Image 1 (cartoon, one colour):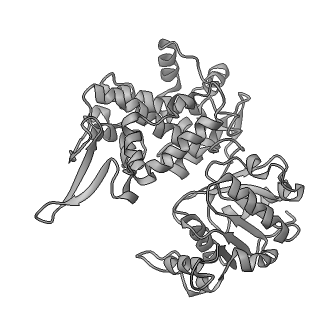
Image 2 (cartoon, rainbow, N blue to C red):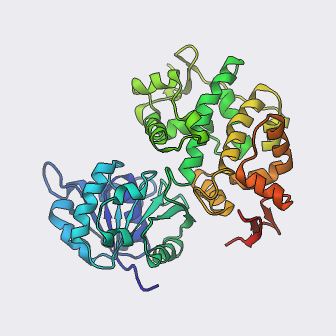
Length: 442
């Protein structure tokens, strides 16, 4: 590597920007922290408030006074020239293509030759951001998609553009995996990259497939009991996770997928919000940040905590119920191959997601390893899609697909042609490549 990162500019002081600034300052890097000038009062008030918040709460983001001292605050109007002193410039502004493009045009005029630029976008393609912008920027830019909360989540997706210098990528990967302690996943410049492409498929598939479970007499709590720990995904379940993410975000994700997925992509079948859920979104019942979504917390007249569930069938709130699945449904295979109503749901949602992932190589990633790591590190799945296929038994999955008259996805066909028993062997030390050969896991 010929480039070095010894200083950082973080442009944007929202939740993600603050997390990235704190991460870098804690690792010993001086940070220039910029945002819009305040409309009233001190011009650096927006960033000053963010730094103040970084020091508060039960778990402050900044680990000590030395980390705080490494942060210099400013604003885009007065302090853009200071970016010329920074080796790595991270853009973390609003997820709006036009605004990002306008910002990068200004940034390009201020930065030094050889500085590295990244955008922290969760799904806007880099080629859309850089189209028509100077060649120098296109050589020096990549996507570094951190996951929230930045100080907790391991995953960073690293995505190059068509012209990105290899040295830019190697320098970023060395810093991210070294001083910043992250797990780098190498993704491609496709819609929603890896983790959100697959994770949002899972969420939207769940929203749409759950209607059949409701018609069969299941409740929201039944669905969350199935689509959670028995499958090795977070205990929030489908609806609990949607409340955490926010229906407003999921609505934007669905719109982005409708606009950018290619014809024939299986994700298009789920890129719509069901009518009852759309009604929640329209009236602002979007999740925890709005006081409630599918669940809400309150108190009884006696002051005890009360959890309520929004019943999509009746359109009314009711007391939440506790649901525990039968012992035979507590594992991925036990649940997904069960013929009951929740087993059918689990096969449609999780089975569908595994099949979708198995058809996305090499479109979103070159190999199974990066996809598995993205889902474990970014969505806290116990196993990635190909690890789960191995545990289910690929032959059993392929037999079911054939019984249902469905074609095999690309990587399952590769596995069959190679005569392999799974996507990993030798205790996970080797993985099966798209070429049908075995390769060492990096």
